[in-house]
Image 1 (cartoon, rainbow, N blue to C red):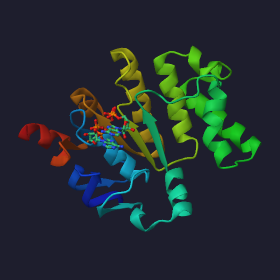
Image 2 (image 1 turned 60 degrees about the horizontal axis):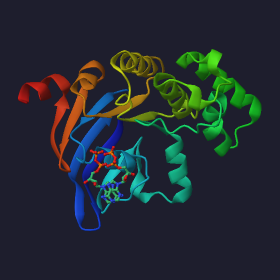
Image 3 (image 1 turned 30 degrees about the vertical axis):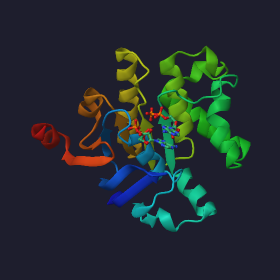
Image 4 (image 1 turned 120 degrees about the horizontal axis):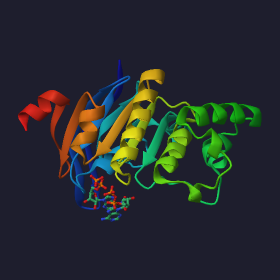
Length: 230
Ligand code: ADP
Ligand code: ADP
């Protein structure tokens, strides 16, 4: 079924149009690629999807819910279902691996024993059991992104948004992180959106994709077909 339907989406900052009539549909369990140059509007589109940005017209329906109709409380519920990771990891450096992963659980007042259970399971999945008490600042880039992935997954979201998640990593580490994301998609069926400017990431990960250019969606479709058209 459809996990995300974006229709006729327009987004302006002051008098600059940054998203112009975007139409994209993403099925449950897809790994969907969004590619385009810096400034194309990719991050803005992700922030619209997770309800961090408002938009002037159009609609975004997520898991059957039109997010434009949501008030604050339900918007918070929506965000619980959407994890996000970034190029710069956005960890709290002075906190440990364990504490970083616990942040969303604390926000949602999940009882400590359940926190422990969820965090230990995720530490195993991302391969950081031995690092649980290390400060985030002492980790390598790849390890930091693994912590960020665990933190993004800890509320069991249906959707994971990845904003240039491997752009700060070397090729070998990039490979390992992409492999981990593929594993999460396969095992938990999580729907993933990969925002990137790297074709190689799209080729490795995605079945469907859109190309954004200057706020326009130039083409959407199966990765193979889109590349044939280019
Ligand atoms: P991308 O992620 O593809 O690099 P962005 O979504 O970050 O693109 O940016 C798209 C355009 O919107 C750029 O021209 C950027 O300068 C502009 N923009 C992004 N955020 C803001 C903001 N908060 N206020 C004004 N303009 C913004
Ligand atoms: P990206 O890696 O997505 O291109 P940017 O460096 O464009 O990121 O943007 C970083 C932050 O600055 C974002 O939160 C974005 O909203 C904000 N931003 C980008 N462009 C502008 C702008 N022209 N005016 C105000 N804020 C902006």
